[in-house]
Length: 110
DNA sequence: TTTATGGCTGTCA
DNA sequence: ATGACAGCCATAA
Image (cartoon, rainbow, N blue to C red):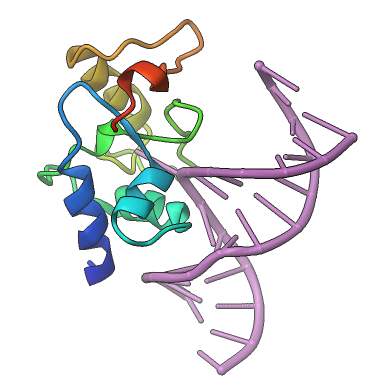
């Protein structure tokens, strides 16, 4: 696991329970402004069981991004991730609207 | 080395 | 509001 990703993970670990942050935000806070895509990459590579609340990271529209790969594992990079992510957030009190989107004005971090 | 490939994002139609 | 496009740049091959 590349060292550069640790910076992203460190920022994600600071996201408070019940709030969400965008990829771009993570990149900026990690001192890598404009590298949102790398953040997504790092999340997808995150091993299952890592002590990083990856589910609190969503895209700029406040929705859970679709995974492209076909991995069947239930970890961050698998198919089930979308469902798991939503379930974990709802369990923390984050509300999704009928379209599966989060109100960033309300649940956004910072 | 060079190329391809993205859990993205801002802008514009 | 949604969808297409073009930048973005670290990894992997």
